Length: 418
Image: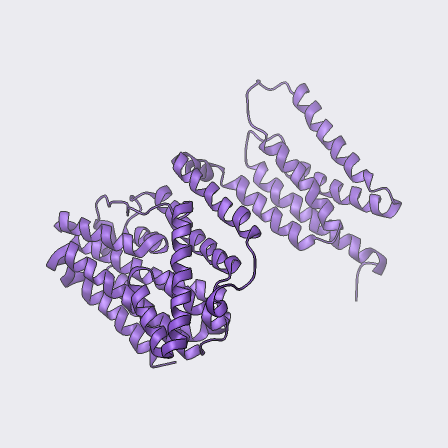
């Protein structure tokens, strides 16, 4: 039984949602002494937006919404000019939040309640974490900002203009799909790259291993193998960073596989889990060592969004696609597995993505795709074991290689389960 008349149910729900949005944002502003508006103001502003949207719709005068916004803006300007507070620059954050709250109230009435609530939560988070966001921006260098702009060019400028058609031998080359995967890989690598730049080395080996694995597990392995050779007292710490980075590369590729080829997510997840679980258990076993670490070096990771880097990856991926299609046609499964092993040594991403692409084109069966993906990772793991042995020497090899071999054995054992 409803406690509200049927004709009022929808408006009451809309205004209740709007009130909640105003209270949420206003609660965050209320706790700041320098804020000129709080709970009551934001609640009223949100309902004003909803009310203006409703009246505009019912009266056939949509301009009422714009009039309300102009009136609200004029009121804020007049209030600022008439304020008797000590004149100082305090920013425009509260005023901007008021305008956003007004428009969110209007959005609720227009039928976008769920989106409005999501944006209200996002707005509150941005307002609440002011100090943390400021610290992040202060730690970012012009090079980091350049990386973000370059990623925007890769994803928002280049990607939309590429043709979405198959070209070349075996119709293996699709410029739009190739570049979309370049954007995906660059985006994940950029997240790890910026995280490394922002957190620095002071938060310990765990974060360096995690974000180093997202950015480049090969670069992280190389860097900390060199670090172990130069600082024998931090041998255990370098081992742990290398181990975590090589677990994270499987997590990253698992996420990519789930996005690119959802039909393969179950068998690939099983195989990857067989490598991730023992690696994670070994990392947890060494967790107590983290607090004993001194300053750790930053992995020397190149900016993953540079056009040269992106083009290089795109070209490698295209070549691997052609080679895989050709050898698969020439020698069947064996040819594809040879490509996976050869290309996986230097770039597991390109090899894995080419395999997923061929599966999506229905040129290989699921079992073949999973085997090729596992072979690429095993080849890449073997290459990094070589880095540990050649750069870190026997002391690091005795500690790190068994863990890497356990991960490899887990991947191989996982193939028996699918």
